[in-house]
Length: 340
Image 1 (tube, rainbow, N blue to C red):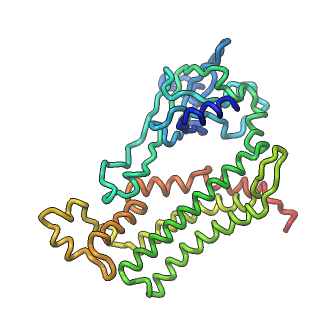
Image 2 (tube, helix red, strand yellow; image 1 turned 90 degrees about the vertical axis):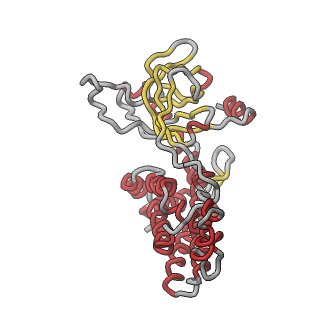
Image 3 (spheres, rainbow, N blue to C red; image 1 turned 180 degrees about the vertical axis):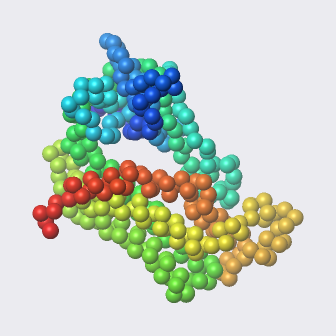
């Protein structure tokens, strides 16, 4: 793994990762027979490496990446010998023979940055990756036939806590962006003095400051682990990652409520210079914003709250770490109730 880290960083490799098995009928194949090769597993090995068959999801940025990290994500049953073929971690080149990516529709519709300020810049394609006896050399295999190690690796290396800290930083940036967007929308329309509007925006501010406070708490209570790394406290990060899937849809709802029909009154960039440009200039200005800037602002709000790109972001936040009921149950089990 050290060698691969050096290789990837030195050669500036772009990586995607894939953690989940597909949700399908595992009992029957299309021929009506049991098909155990739906979940990605090792089908054979030789002196040079392993061969894997099955599918994994959801590889974000897959088409733009060079290689895919395939790591364990769910607990494997130590009592079942059959789990050995699923107990692995490896990296594979995305141009490996037998490897395919099945992608969703793109949300980048080749519009200008003015018309689609987010989706034209930040679209990340999602893909299901299928493996048909894909060969992985031993030097790219990090874990093999060791369910116990697969189940321990994220916790014992503190990788999960470090990932949560990184994620919470990202969630704070998203919350701050929505607050800034709401404030800009309110100022443009002259509604920033309205008590009800200020109350709506304050709710978004509460969310941003809650995430910020939880991150601050985790960093303030950080400790050094056995490997000499400084690790944030897990509980505040865990709290944030369980709250944000509920918070983010509310942030988007606040954009929709404030934007209302203005999210639909969004002419294109071409309309600023074609035969209807005079009407656009006259009828689409606001109290504190000329029509061109007003349209740009509300196209930004549309892109995050109404478009396919924005809807994908909301769905992503709802299920980023897993189904909410599962995550809440895990949080309950890990919580130190003796402190209460």
